[in-house]
Amino acid sequence: MIQYPVLEASATIGITAPSSGVREEMHNLLKLSCSRMRMRGFDVNCGETVWTQNKAKSAPAKVRADEFNKMMRDATIDIIMPPWGGELLIEILEHIDFENVSCKWIMGYSDISVLLLAITLKTGIATAHGTSFFDLRGEFLDETTAMWQSVLSTKTGQSILQHSSSNYQKEWKQLDSSTEVYQLTEPTYWKVVSAAHVKLQGRLLGGCIDVIRHLIGTPFGDVKHFQNHYINNEPIIWYLENCEMVTTDVRRSLVQMKLAGWFDHCTAVMFGRSNANQPFDNYTIENMYEELSDELQIPIIYDIDCGHVPPQITLINGAYAEIEVQGGKGSLKQYFNQ
Image (cartoon, rainbow, N blue to C red; front, top):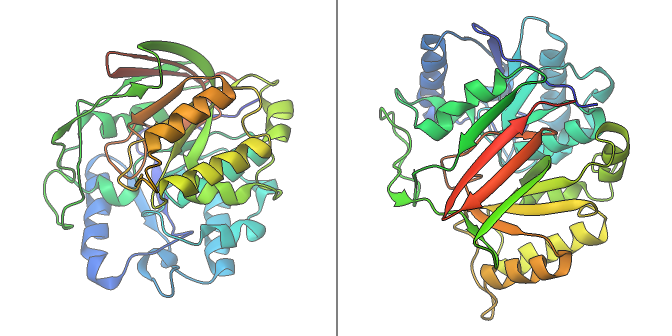
């Protein structure tokens, strides 16, 4: 069975940096995020790792893991949100106390998706792939991003419906404290390989493919165990997003996932928008999507609201989902079924 945390009103958010912390010159923006969240009715508890960053990490692996484990044990902390992603979260996995992971939400994306996926696969506790804490500093939130709170407040046995965004952000602007963090200027259009209309169902799993691929072959990436012990071998819908890889590297990663059995009992794969999907020797990302669809004989949906090209739908690892795409518009209904 899947366990679903519930976000209550006036919850306390624990901010810890299991990957990268925030450099001093950007502390003011992190403090702004804390202030905005307090204005929205939350309390905020920042750990020490949040304020430091050196050599591609906030602190040594054991220090990062200890702070995370402490927040997991702390009954006064209701949800854990890293400030953002980073590069080396995978270093802390061997130090995480998975036996005592509490049923509380963890939300983030990018490098944080390594921790999210590992926790859901090992414990059956749902985790939330969505906006980072740092990007909640705006006075106003777009409709897609703002759904994070409604999604995480959904109770076991209930469902929540989200829709594709109207527009997305083409490129990141210089960080500032503007009233709206994102500049959503480009029309959103969800696409499907060789189909005009798809409707499908399955349990959601996923994250940033650059980093979650490194869980393959480790005790933290046992998808088969998860299927057998937590979801009764129900079909899986994978959602993946590419941060930095060229098309051929994405292809290698997907082949590895296939050979490792991660696509067994898979009913569809969804890919987020990405500015990194650069062709190699005329091999485009669209070529790759078509090949994957043909190999797996399943729909491939792409350019969805997920990942490093905001805004993001809040996707719950372990939730049962109904997804429909037609005419460039998508809907996602997540059922918090055990």
